[in-house]
Amino acid sequence: MKETLLQLQQFIAEPWPWYVAGPLLAMIMFILLYFGHEFGISDNFRLMCAADGADEMNDFFKIDWKNGGWNLMVALGAVFGGYLASHYFMGSQGDIAHISSATVQQLNEMGVPAKEGATPLVPEFISWSSLFTWQGWLIIAGGGFLIGFGARYAGGCTSGHAISGLSALQLPSLIAVVGFFMGGLFMTYVIIPLIFPIK
Amino acid sequence: MMRMSRYILVGILLGFVLYKSEAVSWYRIYEMFRFQSFHMYGIIGSAVVAGILIVQIIKRRHVKNVEGEVIQIRDKNKSIPRYLIGGFIFGLGWSMAGACPAPMFILLGSGYTVFVVYLLAAMTGTYVYGLLRKKLPQ
Image 1: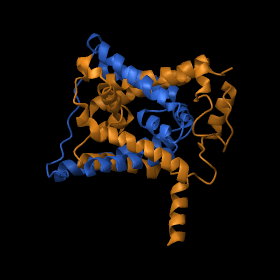
Image 2: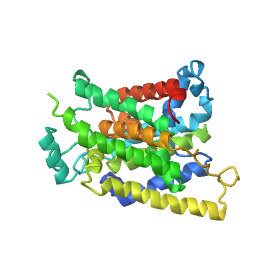
Image 3: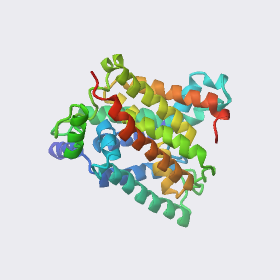
């Protein structure tokens, strides 16, 4: 029994291929629909604003945030999930991002340290100490701000539009996803090369 | 309490899926936008294919939810500028920060406490959108 459980733990701990992760995301969408809700993580930012008192300052936040309690619980669960996955199910090579050699080379040319087979999930420049550099500040605070602003403007993020919306064949979601990619490509090809290297 | 704990379990599953598939990684997002790997496209693509099948089955078989009501999926409001401009801004943030909203919560749980700053920044962004909403093209 104990051996089987250990094998199961090791099985879960190995990196999950895309064809496992994708269908599971669709299943999460279905479970939430079955519970009477639509999958959408970014709405939590609005709920968190409302819960912190923004409901008294602006109409957009005049929502009964307690009705969104279910979604805040999904977000809280994601925090636990991140804790469990990283503390009890670490892969045999550690938690690394198995990026392609082309990407490693690209990053090195740009002045971002990366090593094939030894790239951590979270880069060094995403840390408290990098908040003392303008680049770190831009990536962390600037990136976070754009995500919060853009997700609400577009009415959803990757989960709400790219997964739920496209699954329901919603044209607005397709437009939003096209927007995501236009923004992402502009940032990746035009702006990110100006940000690095961080000195 | 029971009603709420099931959502925590869904969140835990979400955390595992995105963490173990490396979709929480800044590097994976960068690689995706450089078209240097199929991995992220595989995740999103297979999620959408499976999702379309699920939604079609729900619609054709009139699948009921836990309350016994037929599952309805609301149509999103029709507009172009809102989705295109909002989406563009989101895309800028997604590729620079290397994380979309769910991974911010997941990585915070993994012990990267700096993601508190991400979350506060995202809340600020959402709040500023709320203030400017009426002045923006919708």
